[in-house]
Image (cartoon, rainbow, N blue to C red; front, side):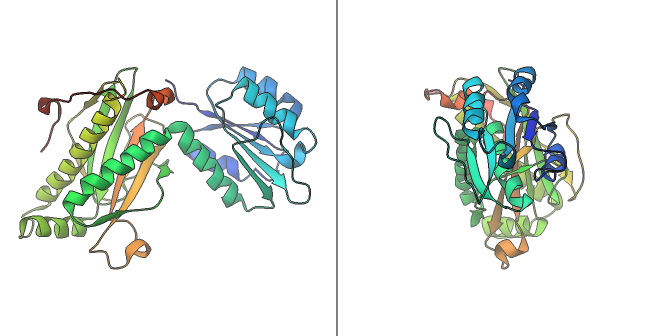
Length: 306
């Protein structure tokens, strides 16, 4: 399935949604502006791969109910963010937008709501919850890690921490992507010391540990997806040293990212995450995770561990 790349903003030129467009473009989306609400339905009919509609309620206060109902009738799965006004909140009867709030709200709040809807649009909730569960269970074997509260979308192709292992993923239905594990060197050394009761002999040993974490995560992801009837193939890890280094694999989709804190980090969240897991899928069928799970056997020879 192709990525839904287009986002429509229903607003006037220089309106309250103007600051949202640059941020959405950073995430690889094409942003269109509809200044006449009456043209929204016609625009939706002519634009394929829509990911989100954001409506400035000040433009459509009286006809908001009919407008949202028309959009939902045309595309029931298309998420709508509606920004109302505090003095005259709109009453929705037949259909409601996915997110409705009354303002004035800072642009950051609008951006946060939009990012949440886009995350749900790009990565089904069942996949997000599955990755969180797999990551938490796997990291439990490597010491005391605690996941950050919320996964987030990451647009930049920049490695966040110094020790990185990247695994390519491919599957049926033209599914393509990769999994990246990034970690702090000092945290990996603490984990190595706890597990083996000795200091890591080299940075390569820490890379191998990062690669093993990535392989185990990919194996859990493979099992999760193949229970839904879609194959997933795991490649060989590539190791990259250095934080804030850019890389490019040709995938434009924002990554689904999870952060984790290790017990050796005395500053906790204030000091920043010690490990990140990034999952990127260029194409994934959102209905895949609506399917009833079937028992799938994964042979040991199908997984690659360091």
